Image 1: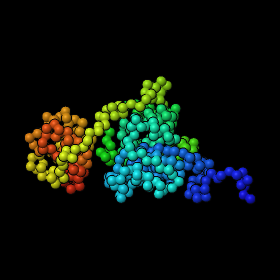
Image 2 (image 1 turned 90 degrees about the vertical axis):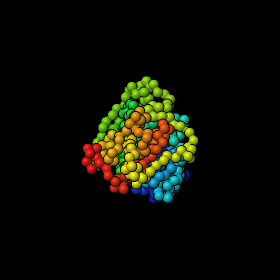
Image 3 (image 1 turned 45 degrees about the horizontal axis):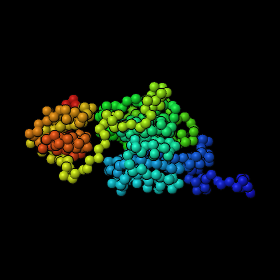
Image 4 (image 1 turned 90 degrees about the horizontal axis):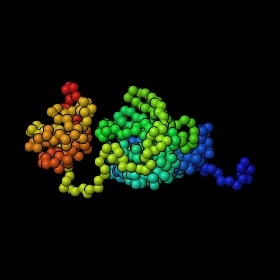
Length: 393
């Protein structure tokens, strides 16, 4: 008779689960009881993008019992070089739907709960409150501060990371040991920190940092090892360096401090200096007029004014000869530099920011203004002339 059969207790794991997780069960810090703890845990991943993809994949493979995925976007072709949870045939599909299918294929033990929405002050408590650990994979500052504040108020561990170009950083916020506001009390000015769409990102950097987030989540659930709490890991992939900075809880922090002054969720767009969300209907006839690189070159050759709405650091790296630099945030204050009697071509890196500027200029009375589709990236792809900020071709 096998030992333990007389107790009449159910096994912690099935035979299939013992086999599936055997390589991590044999770890001293895991064991059968640790694996069961993972399977009973609930982790929320905010963002099914560059960070959320690898973190949720490894958490599903590790056997986390419930994975919540929050994301309001749909899969785009430009996502696929780093958002490895999605595939080419998923283009156009809601990201949570795509993520759910992939995660359930990886491990049918896992319950995936999709939230095809944006996290807001109205729904954050309801969603976050159901989970044991939160992973922040968002890519904007309002959501970062929102997640932080909600986690502090709900006493939830938060694993945070960010990525840009060849670099990443990560830390873990444990209840009572400080929060995101202790490190970054105020958000940067709008436009001062580029997004991945503007500054670029190496896909494998997202994989590295997202995987690190998954490791931190497993340690938090198990209560094993030393997390990144009160330490900020800085990863420089181009230089092949990892640095560690120590940080401490700020007793005067307005959210997690000894006498908090922020005790409810606020308007995070306003806090970060951004305009609030609008819900105006999109009118078909107001589609932004645009030209491809060939059309833009012809217009410029015929005397059109070329406006570059990127930031000065982008301009310094590469620019189109003859362009005038007017960063997006300054356009409406510098309209005197834009000639309404001429055709105007507006460009940015890939065409997103310039499209918004074109719409603003049209509303301001500029009748012949066009967005350069694909931005300077498409211009360079056609091997049309560019120069660096110092004037060298």
